[in-house]
Image 1: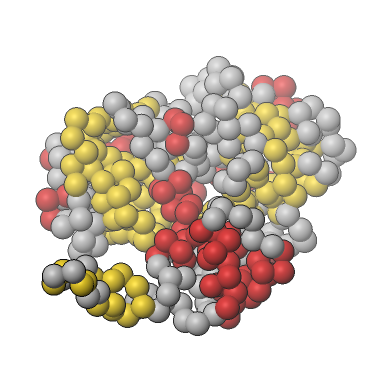
Image 2: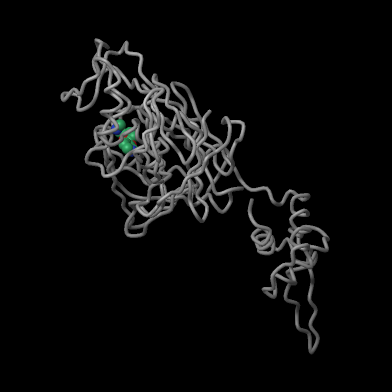
Length: 413
Ligand SMILES: CNCc1ccc(Oc2cccnc2)o1
């Protein structure tokens, strides 16, 4: 909920706190006299003593006394002026929950693309009219020349590569972006002039929408803000939530926490955003009904990564519990017979725990025969930190709190 002072300053800025008669037009000087016509201030929020009184305090930079602040807050609420923006959009899983796609409207008139919301990166990039035709195979493209609100960001370029080896690059526009009813103007929309073959192969994915911190946005020479950072000033609360699901559509919400979407309570844990990611430390894990092992796991909450990637010692401990599970070097990962009944995997968050049901850890068959299946838990070897990807996140309701001190909230559901 924005502070009263913040709302008051906003109202003052709009002139809503000004007097009903404002914006005097400059009169005409006739001889020594001057006549000044006054016009009604259409934005005036009405005669309200507390506003008038508070305006004086704001005008002279004096702190608004407690009871006046409370009176103003009540008035703002009564007048519905404390309502801020929120948004809510469906997240539909692609094949085997490999990624989740959400509709995003860009430009005027709206061009709606299906984007992969990625809390592990900070670029909003799209297939576009500038993407080589040979690289576009089924994707919907954004055409800035067809948007009256698109503006070329002159001289700006971007280039990004992802953990799975895929990459893309191009030019930059700013345009209006709307997600689930939440519209934000002048958002950086990065137009792909090159995409790697992995993206070309994914006909349903029209681009990515980065939700990590703007400090790792790749636009040069002037780094750009993420959609979330651009939306923050209008949001009821500086948060977004990820409610991904196993084999069915989940939801991303912006600006509010839907307390009916989870069980019990949220447990918050500290975030180290110094590298631009939502990085946190899980104080322990358990396999199946086993006791919690207090080996801590430090990693990022990454909706753009499919699997749960953890230290090799944890991976070995997990698959040791499964007869016929083995490391298959040809797949570069642990596999097991697809008919296997898998143990759950629990990761601690503060003093609480998130349980990933065993079935979430059967990612997909490795071959058309479907006899051998690839594990949803694999090693983070070589990355430098763990990655709590979709396999881990879809077992929870996750709050990405982007306030002054960013934090993550987890709840079971
Ligand atoms: C699956 N390859 C193409 C692709 C789809 C989504 C992404 O983006 C990623 C990949 C890995 C980590 N984070 C984001 O790449």
